[in-house]
Image (cartoon, rainbow, N blue to C red; front, side, top):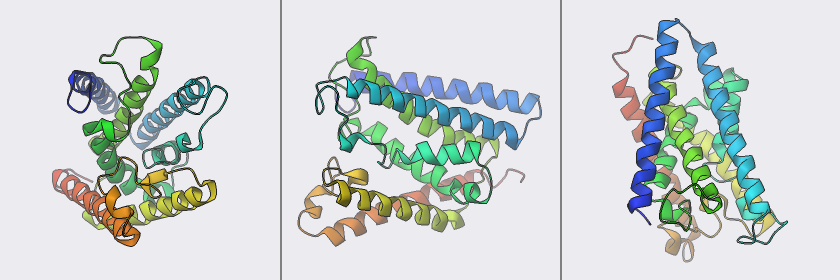
Length: 251
């Protein structure tokens, strides 16, 4: 049931089918009707609404569950300020507030989001998104796993759509923009962790689920340096691959 178990692999399969189907249908509509950036922003706006709806579902389920902090309580550590939660805000801006700021966060929305999401979907035990059941049966106990896979699947779909539609052309030179956006969100998460005292947003406080957690306990500056290097370096790699893959495309 854990990493690369039956539930994990079948989940990745149905998620890949859904994402691929959506991309084919939407890109064909865009091409046949000669649609442009306005259509792209509508697609991303729809994706933003979709993940916000799933965030609402998660909130309702947790608020009514005794498995977290008790019925009627929403634990602070579940608030939407983790790294993947940043898509809630980034995609909303891209879809509903296009402009200079939206253009600035495109590299983060593409490269950093798909990088972090791919890691989580590849190693789901690190973030606890699989649930306790061994299959994808349509029962209440699987609501949160479905929520997690649909949510994170959207965080793969949007970056792929951005590039395949031409809404964003990745450039290795945009790494600094993604890094600035990432560091700003990290500073915000770090501040919230200190204020709330019981949260681990972006694994900056306790390092839960992070393979470098042991370093945090002995050398926090080194831990932060490693996290930043992995995140920014990985983002640069994704942007570089995207850059090479789209060199032949017309602007």
